[in-house]
Image (cartoon, rainbow, N blue to C red; front, side):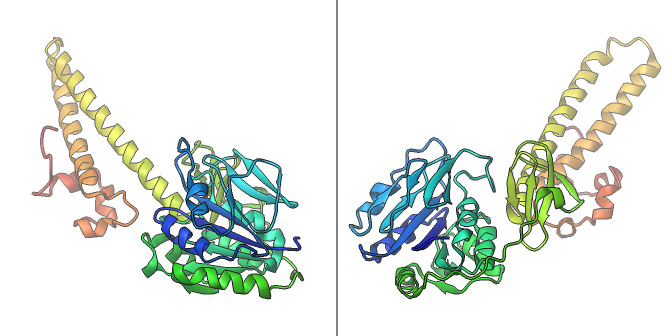
Length: 342
């Protein structure tokens, strides 16, 4: 619980300009502490504090671990570190990535829920869904939610994902967000409503288990309503990010299978002339034909992206049942790419 207002802001691709516009509209005596997470490459040296300081309003700093929080400051998460709010101080952590990100917007938002209704969360331009679950948790704790209007964002997927969760208080263009932050900061009393947070843990998770895309460990759904998945190591994913990672894993596995099939065919062809038995040579020939059929199926799937999360098999002329009829259903198609020898 805090006796000052907390503002947490998260963004990804395309959020820097929106963030500059927001900071430029904040008064230097704002009685709030502002925390910002923007996705950056781990090896990138963050110059975001310098960029925001050009607005000449509130000072922006990259905090050190354990630094005491002051109002009238903007704290910016350093690359490759999660930033958390804990008992009036800033904590930096190199804990597991969440939604493939460190710093993660979800981690920051989740750490702010102890402020109850004394927190305002803002989600800006970006891709996928890091920050969406955090918005839900802030909302459940009584906080106020502002999302950049998708039409105003350079990358609308992230703010749209927040809106789709149906817990957003305001959708605003970046030019109007600062005024609402100021209005809410001054209007907000220090009285905090009881926190209503779903505290489901991995131990009470859904019985359905999946493979963690980051470490290969067991991944379980930890909250049916929030759609959050976590492994025992601590890697955490929203639904959109998990589906994206699974699609990427499928593609990698398919290309690996294609390479192994090509290598097996070359090996069989190279050793065939050394085999004295006619029966053995015929068996090798049959295996080469089987490889050609299997490779043709892979060419079809890879060529049309049937593994992608947004590309149903039905639109490619084959039903899922036909695809399972390996491999004759595909080899019967006249327009099959890569038909015959791969």
